Image 1 (cartoon, rainbow, N blue to C red):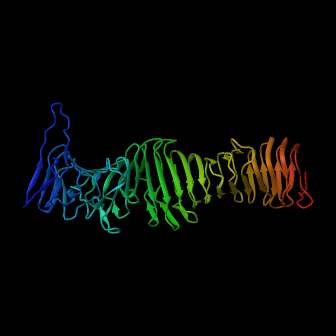
Image 2 (image 1 turned 60 degrees about the horizontal axis):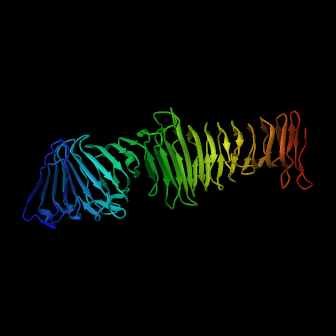
Image 3 (image 1 turned 120 degrees about the vertical axis):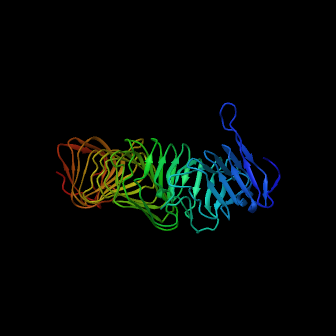
Amino acid sequence: LAANNIDFGARSTLEFNGPLDGGGNTIPYYFKGAIANGNNAILNVNTKSLTAYHSTIGTVAEINIGAGNLFAIDASAGDVTILNAQDINFGVLDSALVLSNLTGGGVKNILLAADLVAPGADEGNVVFDGGVNGLNIGSNVAGTARNIGDGGGNKFNTLLIYNAVTITDDVNLEGIQNVRINNNADFTSSTAFNAGIIQINNATYTIDANNGNLNIPAGNIQFAHADAQLILQNSSGNDRTITLGANIDPDNDNEGVVILNSVTAGKKLTIAGGKTFGGAHKLQTIVFKGAGDCSAAGTTFNTTNIELDITGKLELGATKANVVLFNDAVQLTQTGHIGGFLDFNAKNGTVTLNNNVSVAGAVQNTGGTNNGTLIVLGASNLNRVNGIAMLKVGAGNVTIAKGGNVKIGEIQGTGTNTLTLPANFNLTGSINKTGGQALKLNFTNGGSVSGVVGTAANSVGDIT
């Protein structure tokens, strides 16, 4: 129906009641005209698919979606406000409402002026589709809460997410039983985590603490694809804490990517709750990124790789994973053991090991020969150390387990304790060349140093 102006007059009813085609397929209907006197109108959707395109659809007093039928409001032509003295009724449990911006030139907004009510417990379906340029779902009065479904009563059965969709924090999605984020979707919501189950396919789900600290149940998040991404971030101008109520655990090993993003320089994202990323099953990867600081010292990471692409300060606890640098400005303080390798990855970052923190795997520098600084603040056991620019030890006794031909630009003493080196430790590099305290050196069974071993200003301690 493409009439330029549809005038409902005094309490009129318009009904779409189209059959399937001869092959049993849905025939889509399109309602494109502007509406006058919508406050007098009743729209009955008794065909399988009807899409309304004009913003005046928001003025229709009553919309009834019949059994098994789908009604779509598409904001491609401009923003739409719904539920302003308007009732949208779902006939039965399989009725569906679609809010979309399929072809709009830029992000469009569909705003709620009241709650969207589910027809019953786990009944009715909702679809949000951002199309080409994205869709925002929000309240028509910023900061005034709107509910989709009733978190304590009648919940919609399913919310399907397609493409780029952002839900503002004043729209509560607790009244959804199942949120399914479909392939290639980019979904942002800081209320959807209160839904019954959140299933991430080959897509991205972002939870942003931009408006305050968040408590996330976490146990309801499912990774339905190996490359499913969950982003926990702080994009605000304040420090924020995200507290997990349960482990974040994929169904199978090496599935799911978690990104912890502290966006703003000088501000901090803290992950609290003492839970595990990757409980019974390993996550594929955990990535730290952003210009801000991040603390996850009380959190356990069960993953194959932890990737560091963060330029702020980062504090991590114990992990069995490999730790790999992806940024020259990384400033990592490790408060617990690293069970895998530590790879500077040709980046000039700095990694600090607290007292009694060890690295089980190699300290290496894939693709580089003189990058990165490793600082050991106390006692530690290291495996093999090779290819880095600077190793600072001496505040406690440190042992390196594996030798052979090793390249370290400089080993520098930060105290007078002992560095114990393995048999046949042949160092290409220097010790206390540009600075350092009188570090003691213990070669267990021979070795060599190609460069300077102490200077008049920076002598080493006893060599045994």
